[in-house]
Length: 174
Image (cartoon, rainbow, N blue to C red; front, top):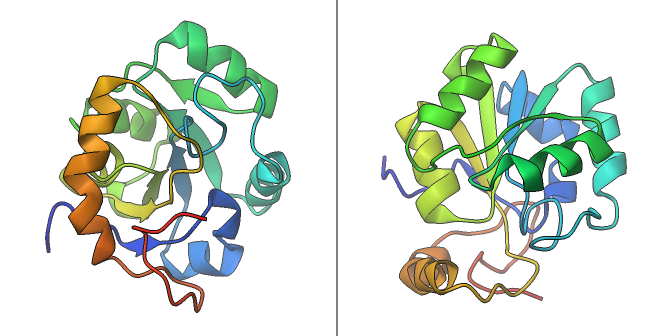
Protein backbone atom coordinates (compact mmCIF):
# COMPACT_ATOMS: atom_id res chain seq x y z
CA UNK A 1 0.00 0.00 0.00
CA UNK A 2 1.21 3.47 -0.84
CA UNK A 3 1.82 5.73 2.14
CA UNK A 4 0.10 8.49 0.16
CA UNK A 5 -3.12 6.57 -0.54
CA UNK A 6 -6.17 7.19 1.66
CA UNK A 7 -8.41 4.38 2.81
CA UNK A 8 -11.42 6.26 1.39
CA UNK A 9 -12.08 9.62 -0.27
CA UNK A 10 -15.27 11.67 -0.05
CA UNK A 11 -16.12 15.29 -0.81
CA UNK A 12 -16.78 16.66 2.66
CA UNK A 13 -16.68 15.50 6.27
CA UNK A 14 -20.49 15.56 6.32
CA UNK A 15 -20.44 12.87 3.59
CA UNK A 16 -18.91 10.38 6.04
CA UNK A 17 -21.88 8.25 7.10
CA UNK A 18 -22.24 6.15 10.23
CA UNK A 19 -22.48 3.17 7.87
CA UNK A 20 -19.05 3.99 6.41
CA UNK A 21 -17.61 4.46 9.90
CA UNK A 22 -18.94 1.03 10.92
CA UNK A 23 -17.61 -0.52 7.70
CA UNK A 24 -14.14 0.86 8.51
CA UNK A 25 -14.28 -0.44 12.10
CA UNK A 26 -14.03 3.06 13.53
CA UNK A 27 -14.08 3.59 17.30
CA UNK A 28 -12.43 7.03 17.20
CA UNK A 29 -11.84 9.85 14.72
CA UNK A 30 -9.00 12.36 14.55
CA UNK A 31 -10.19 15.44 12.66
CA UNK A 32 -8.19 18.17 10.98
CA UNK A 33 -9.73 21.67 11.21
CA UNK A 34 -8.79 24.00 8.35
CA UNK A 35 -10.57 23.00 5.14
CA UNK A 36 -12.02 19.99 6.93
CA UNK A 37 -14.35 21.42 9.57
CA UNK A 38 -14.09 25.14 8.83
CA UNK A 39 -12.52 27.65 6.45
CA UNK A 40 -8.89 28.42 7.32
CA UNK A 41 -8.62 30.62 10.44
CA UNK A 42 -12.44 30.65 10.86
CA UNK A 43 -14.06 30.10 14.24
CA UNK A 44 -17.29 28.95 12.59
CA UNK A 45 -17.64 25.42 11.15
CA UNK A 46 -18.97 24.74 7.68
CA UNK A 47 -22.72 24.20 7.40
CA UNK A 48 -23.79 20.80 8.74
CA UNK A 49 -20.51 20.07 10.54
CA UNK A 50 -21.84 20.57 14.08
CA UNK A 51 -24.79 18.29 13.36
CA UNK A 52 -22.43 15.65 11.89
CA UNK A 53 -20.19 15.84 14.98
CA UNK A 54 -23.21 15.49 17.29
CA UNK A 55 -24.52 12.48 15.33
CA UNK A 56 -21.14 10.71 15.35
CA UNK A 57 -20.63 11.35 19.07
CA UNK A 58 -24.17 10.09 19.82
CA UNK A 59 -23.27 6.84 18.03
CA UNK A 60 -20.51 6.22 20.57
CA UNK A 61 -17.56 7.13 18.36
CA UNK A 62 -15.04 9.39 20.08
CA UNK A 63 -13.67 12.42 18.23
CA UNK A 64 -10.56 14.52 18.84
CA UNK A 65 -9.32 17.42 16.74
CA UNK A 66 -5.71 16.84 15.67
CA UNK A 67 -4.16 19.89 14.01
CA UNK A 68 -0.79 21.36 13.15
CA UNK A 69 -2.07 24.76 14.25
CA UNK A 70 -1.24 26.44 17.55
CA UNK A 71 -3.35 25.78 20.63
CA UNK A 72 -4.58 29.42 20.63
CA UNK A 73 -6.26 28.71 17.27
CA UNK A 74 -7.45 25.14 17.86
CA UNK A 75 -8.58 25.08 21.51
CA UNK A 76 -11.31 27.76 21.17
CA UNK A 77 -12.60 26.10 17.98
CA UNK A 78 -12.59 22.65 19.62
CA UNK A 79 -14.42 24.02 22.65
CA UNK A 80 -17.05 25.66 20.42
CA UNK A 81 -17.90 22.33 18.74
CA UNK A 82 -17.64 20.28 21.94
CA UNK A 83 -14.44 18.37 21.19
CA UNK A 84 -11.06 17.76 22.79
CA UNK A 85 -7.97 18.66 20.77
CA UNK A 86 -4.29 18.04 20.16
CA UNK A 87 -2.55 21.12 18.79
CA UNK A 88 0.89 21.32 17.18
CA UNK A 89 0.53 17.72 15.98
CA UNK A 90 3.56 17.90 13.66
CA UNK A 91 1.72 15.96 10.94
CA UNK A 92 2.74 13.90 9.02
CA UNK A 93 4.89 12.62 11.86
CA UNK A 94 2.86 10.28 14.07
CA UNK A 95 3.57 12.16 17.35
CA UNK A 96 0.28 14.08 17.47
CA UNK A 97 -1.74 11.10 16.26
CA UNK A 98 -0.18 8.99 19.01
CA UNK A 99 -0.95 11.66 21.66
CA UNK A 100 -4.58 11.72 20.52
CA UNK A 101 -4.74 7.91 20.43
CA UNK A 102 -3.50 7.75 24.03
CA UNK A 103 -6.18 10.27 25.10
CA UNK A 104 -8.78 8.05 23.49
CA UNK A 105 -7.26 4.76 24.71
CA UNK A 106 -7.77 3.20 21.28
CA UNK A 107 -5.66 0.90 19.13
CA UNK A 108 -4.43 2.45 15.85
CA UNK A 109 -6.45 0.10 13.63
CA UNK A 110 -9.73 1.46 15.09
CA UNK A 111 -8.78 5.13 14.64
CA UNK A 112 -9.76 7.06 11.51
CA UNK A 113 -7.93 10.24 10.47
CA UNK A 114 -10.00 12.74 8.45
CA UNK A 115 -8.43 15.64 6.57
CA UNK A 116 -7.94 17.45 3.29
CA UNK A 117 -4.21 16.96 2.70
CA UNK A 118 -2.34 13.95 1.37
CA UNK A 119 1.09 14.95 2.66
CA UNK A 120 -0.04 15.63 6.22
CA UNK A 121 -3.29 13.82 7.06
CA UNK A 122 -3.10 10.72 4.83
CA UNK A 123 0.66 10.18 5.10
CA UNK A 124 0.53 10.73 8.87
CA UNK A 125 -2.35 8.29 9.30
CA UNK A 126 -0.55 5.61 7.31
CA UNK A 127 2.68 6.14 9.25
CA UNK A 128 0.71 5.79 12.51
CA UNK A 129 -1.05 2.60 11.33
CA UNK A 130 -4.44 4.31 11.14
CA UNK A 131 -7.06 4.49 8.40
CA UNK A 132 -7.77 7.76 6.60
CA UNK A 133 -10.46 9.66 4.75
CA UNK A 134 -9.28 12.28 2.27
CA UNK A 135 -11.59 15.23 1.63
CA UNK A 136 -11.78 17.88 -1.03
CA UNK A 137 -10.43 21.22 0.15
CA UNK A 138 -13.41 23.56 0.45
CA UNK A 139 -11.68 26.94 0.68
CA UNK A 140 -8.68 28.52 -0.99
CA UNK A 141 -5.59 28.96 1.16
CA UNK A 142 -2.90 31.50 0.42
CA UNK A 143 0.17 30.44 2.43
CA UNK A 144 3.21 29.38 0.40
CA UNK A 145 3.58 25.99 2.15
CA UNK A 146 -0.03 24.94 1.53
CA UNK A 147 0.16 26.08 -2.10
CA UNK A 148 3.31 23.96 -2.51
CA UNK A 149 1.65 20.90 -0.93
CA UNK A 150 -1.45 21.35 -3.11
CA UNK A 151 0.74 21.48 -6.22
CA UNK A 152 2.64 18.36 -5.10
CA UNK A 153 -0.56 16.40 -4.51
CA UNK A 154 -2.39 17.47 -7.68
CA UNK A 155 -1.50 14.37 -9.77
CA UNK A 156 -2.08 11.99 -6.86
CA UNK A 157 -5.57 13.41 -6.30
CA UNK A 158 -6.49 12.78 -9.94
CA UNK A 159 -6.01 9.04 -9.35
CA UNK A 160 -8.14 8.85 -6.20
CA UNK A 161 -11.81 8.15 -6.82
CA UNK A 162 -14.53 9.54 -4.61
CA UNK A 163 -16.83 7.15 -2.80
CA UNK A 164 -20.63 7.42 -2.67
CA UNK A 165 -21.28 6.83 -6.35
CA UNK A 166 -19.67 10.07 -7.47
CA UNK A 167 -18.03 9.85 -10.89
CA UNK A 168 -15.43 12.46 -9.97
CA UNK A 169 -12.13 12.27 -8.20
CA UNK A 170 -10.58 14.21 -5.36
CA UNK A 171 -8.70 16.35 -7.84
CA UNK A 172 -11.90 18.19 -8.76
CA UNK A 173 -13.58 20.66 -6.45
CA UNK A 174 -17.04 22.18 -6.86
